[in-house]
Length: 173
Image (cartoon, rainbow, N blue to C red; front, side, top):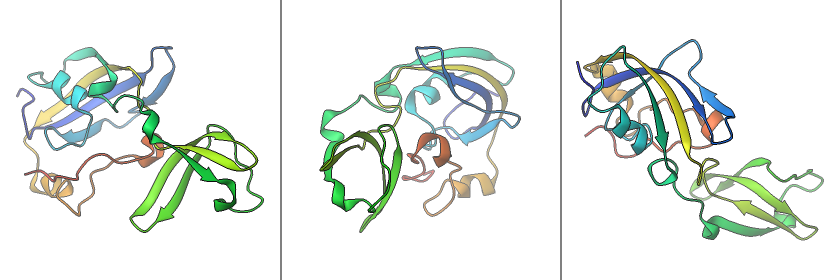
């Protein structure tokens, strides 16, 4: 079966940057998702279309097809006194704060005596991504798998590695 829109796909992968640094990999368990539901970045979906289980490939995904270009307008100055007193803040530190709209995640770009420059870009924004992939399974999704990407379901996003979940907002429809 070839990968098409709404196919369930499992892949083993290693993700690296231009520097050659490996930043993520599937490990012992293949990563599964339903193609066409927004669970993975657009460039990965496009690169997998019409492929079959057993194929191995390398994909290079430019920022616009990955996590977007780095945007200067996503940098914000936040007064230092808005952070917990006595907390040691360092450049590169990931941070999560609560807002009326829910959690806000950002990376600390710079710390001065009075301000913190917060970077609200995705941590991989502006980066070219290099995937080394083996497709391990392609099939029709089960009803349960389809429900998992519906609004209110769990899409399986790993917020520990990416810092945010960009999938599932539109459901599977």
